[in-house]
Structures are given as C-alpha cells and as structure tokens.
Image (tube, rainbow, N blue to C red):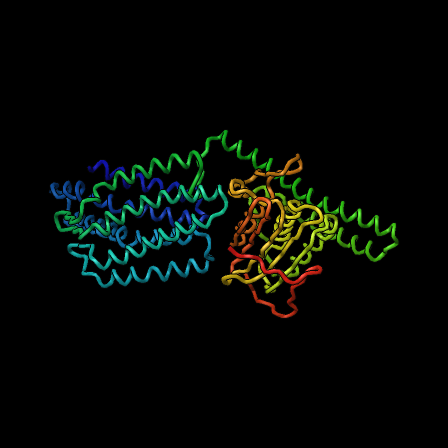
Amino acid sequence: MTLFYIGMFTGLWIMGTVLLVNNYKNKYTCWMSALFIIAGFASFSVVVNQTVLPFFREQEDVSFWVIESTRIATIVLWGIEYHFLPYLFLMSGIVFTGRFSRKLQNGLAFLLLIPIILYIIYVPPIYPEAKFGGTLFKILSGAYFGGGVLFYTISYLRENNPSNRRNRFRTNLVVIAICFVYASDYYGLNYFLIGKRSLEISSNNLWQLNFLIVFWLILFFIYFSLRYGFMGIKLRIEQQKLDFSMRSLTQGTAILNHTLKNEVQKINYLSEKIRDSISKDCKDEALQDIASILKVTDHMLSMVTRMKEKADEIILKEQPQQLRALLDMQLASLGAILQEKHILLLKDYRVDPELVCDPVHIRETFSNICLNAIESMEEGKGCLEITLAEWKKDVIIWVKDNGTGISKENSTKVFDPFFTTKKGTSHYGLGLSYCYSVMQKHGGNLKILKSEPGEGTLMELRFPRRRVLHWRTDSLNSSAQGVTEFHPPVT
C-alpha cells in the first residue's frame, strides 16, 4: 500500500503544479492547484509515519529531536489537509461559476475561513498526540462540500454555450471524485490519531480506496487535457498549436468580414434613401441619412481597430455609458433597414441605467442580435420588440421578433463559432459566438429565452447589478410606432 500512497501524493502534486504553471493568472486554476497540492498532504504523512519514522527510530545515530520534528511535520501537514480541503473545494466552486466579482470572491474567501479557524482554536491540543475528527467537523465540512457541489452544478446548468457546457461537464466529473473524499475522510471517519509511536485510524475504511480515485483522476486529467483541455489548460503537440493558430487567423478574418458586411448593408440602405430624398428634393431627410452614414462609418473604424481583440481575446475598454442612449443610437442606425423591410419597431424602456461597459463591443453585440432578428422576419409582417428592464436586480435587454424562429436542435449550437443556418457565402456563423463572448467578458450572459420555428425568438442580454453606477428614472417612456407599449414574456 505504501507505493499506492506515494503514487497518490505524487500524482496530486504533479497535477497541481501543472495547473499552476500553465495558467497561473487564472484564479480558478490557482484554487484548484492549491486543492490538489494540499490533498496530497495526508497520503504523504501516512508514508512518513509508516516508513520514515520507523526507520529513524531503528537508527541509533538519529536524535530524538529529528524524529519528533518529523512527526510534528506530519501532524501539521495532515491537519492542513483535513481542515482546509473543504474550504478550498467550496472556494473553487464559487470562482468556477464566474458570477462573483473579484472583490466579492476575496470577501467570501476571508469570511468562509473564519469557521475553520474557530474550529481549530477550540479542538483539543494536538501535541504530543494529534487526534482529528468528530461530529462537529463532519457537519462543518459537509456544509462546505455541499456548497461546492451546488455551485459547480448550478454553473453547469446555467451555461448556455454548448462548448463551454461540455467543458463544465468534464470539470464536474472531477467534482464527483472529490466528493468521494468527503464520504471516506470526513463522514466515514471517527478519528485518526498520530501517536508518539504509531498511527491509528478509526473509520469505515473507505479511505483505503482513495488511491483508486486519485489514479482515475490522474488518467482523466491527462486524457481530457490532451484531447480537449479543461480547468484552464490545454496540453498540445506542436502541430496542434499550429492548427490552433491557423484557426485563430481564419476566425479573425471571418469576423472582420462579418462586421463589415453588416455595416455596409446599412450604408447601402441609407444610400438608397438619400438618392430617393434627393430626387424628391427632401434636403432634411437626406442630411439626416448622411449623419446616420457617418455614425456607421465611425463604428466601422472603431471595430476595425479592435479586430485583433476579437480574433484573440476580447479586451474591454470600459467607461460609463447610459444604456438607453446606446440602444437608441444603434436602433437609429438600423432605421433604414427597418423601413426597407417595413418592420415595426417597439421600444419599452422601463429603466435607464448608467453602466460601466465597453460601448463599442456592446453596440456591436446589440446590432448583431437585432440584425439576426430582422433577417429572420418576413417583409411587411415583421415586428422587432426591444425592452430594457431591471430583473432580479440585474439589467436586462429583451430582443423579440416574430420571425422564423430556431429549432430545438439548432438552439444548442447557435453560440458555437462558425455555426450558421443562413445560406450563402456571406454568412460566417460568428455573430452570436462573438456576442456571447462579449457578454461573458462583462460578467453577464446571453441566452435564448424562447424560440419556436415559425413563431419567432426571444433573446436576453443580462448585465450584473455590480456594473450599474446609478439608475435614471426621469424621461423614461415606452415608444412604439403606432402601437402601445410591449411587455415581453419571461420564461
């Protein structure tokens, strides 16, 4: 069994180190790295108590203080593993959700540490013999493990992007293995005693099977890291790195084409309107459309300068932005297309929050979603409905259309890069993938609330409450071109 225990702590320490080295800037992988490394302390202590200490005691030239300091070191290491593993598991689950700000994560990290510290202070002395275990810590550790499982599960269930959802599912498989540790080392443990000359464990003996879980975990870690990448790391051979670089280059070019296509389409519509206005000697309308074209070209220039960020990693340039004004600006640029297809626009602004966001990326995101809705609707029969509201303390934008809708099969794929149901070479399937990434970067979410073939689609953009600087309640109005205000269904 000694060899198995050596394999346990060695494997756990290697996994923790690989995680940390490959993605030390990612807070989640830092917590998981700490969890794996500390999880190896107990098996390391067992090896030292069963092999090293007996060897030292048989040697006449090894002093008492060397033996005792080694034994104390095993007490400290085992105590750290036993008391802090539940805490690390819970914190990893909190960070994994991606729904807590860094400040809140730091606050929870401090608050959740307090019960563990208080327990350590009030347990019996750990020297000269250390005894760990008891009903109180079974309950406390159970609460921490249960909370961690809850956060991991919620994170998986609330993930809409199919690719991210599969990755979260693979990570959740690791959680199953870690949960077995609670059954064996906490719930099933009466006590373990590091005595002066021996190690005594009273339990249901499930802890003896921990080595099987660790080896399964190592195999799982290696296989999925090599094939898919998870927990923030990807281990690839050089050819795969080259393939990834080529895909990034291709995606960057396609995104650029996608953005320019949308904006040029707006310019075409506006140009047609200007020609008609000039032929009818409607100078004011022509000037208004020219101003709209200038706004479109300004947006195109802003997006072109940001293409590298979209092809690689989206970098936010945040600033305060009145959300209602941003929506109105973008809807104005779509006005010519709406008129061309005779689509009715309904607006319902229930709040007017000032957000800290990246206006360029948010405008492009909102524009992409609206254009998708417009393209799905039949000319002369379409209705585009925009609602800005507060929902469960978050800021919500609902975009509803009565177009062709999305089938259940395709609704799980629409956020995947390069997936599209549109015909023709000018459609690249990158719009919603980009939009989803932008919302995730803002700590929010983009999802399909409801969609039925032939009945239309209801999309939701959600911004977290922490991004709101303040709410404006003056000058709010619900506007529609000839109809009353709209209240979209929420599912």
